[in-house]
Amino acid sequence: MNSIAKKGIRWTYSATVFCAIIALQQQKATAATLSNGWNYAIDSFSDGVTGPQIGGGEFEFYGIAIKETSDTAFIAINSNLSLAGYADSAAQRGNINYGDLFFNFSGQNFNTANTNSNLFAVRFATGNDSGVAATGVYSNVTAKNVTQTNSGFANLNQFNTVVASQGGTPSMGDLAATDPYFEQTGNWTVLNSIAAGTKVGEINFLTSGNLSALGLNFAQFNAVGSQTIGFSFNKSSMPSGNYIANFFAECANDAIAIKGSFEQGSAEPVPEPATIFGTLAGFGILGIGGAKRKIKRKIA
Image 1 (cartoon, rainbow, N blue to C red):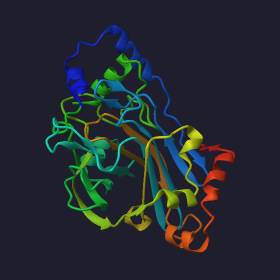
Image 2: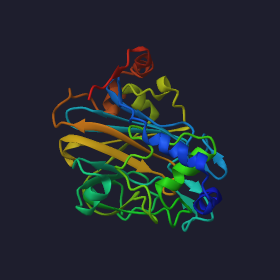
Image 3: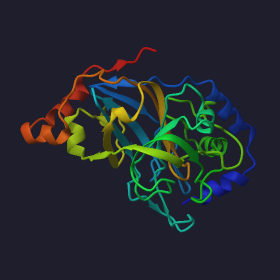
């Protein structure tokens, strides 16, 4: 997989590529989009790095969406990477997966929140290199880098430069590719996996039917990755307030971030997906209809 990543570390970057990266710094982070109760962040469709392929490969992440009810948070990820991961003999385990999903409510940048153990995180990929033993929601989290053992990029600047040099458009959903929220340079500075934390909740995986019944519709943004991964957890596992949530591939070959907020008891309660399907057999049609509704932009 990542011969391209390793070569990227050794490349001599041209003035043209540097200009492209500087131009990216001028881009304003895309506002999250609200549709049918879901808050969406849509990533570039041309910044996943899979071997020599830039865009559209196994490591292309298309979007993330979050919906909340009075007591539950629903997470959906659209991507080309399955939960089984990507087989690669160059990786220490022979497989590269998703990193963990981090939530930062602190108002600090990621590194500062990490130093202060102010992060929350969700381990949702059972086969990844997370430092915690089980899937679930964790508090008092510190993060670690696992790109070094997954044939990955040493830092985000190298990732951005390789993508731009090959005609792709690096981005991170609701954050610009070069946003200082993340460390951009240095050796093995992409923090993409839980190092330690205290488990405070479980997650429940959702089927595509569950997600459709809840009104999810990535296709309205032309985000049509081969995989849609969904899960939910009790909001009491996390605090109220504004957050930035993000996840990387374990090799940092793509990443996405989303801005949002949780408020305990703030939304109307709805039945859990199993209840929905037990009582309304045809309710999944509503998920399709959601695509025709007017999309509202969140006002900061």
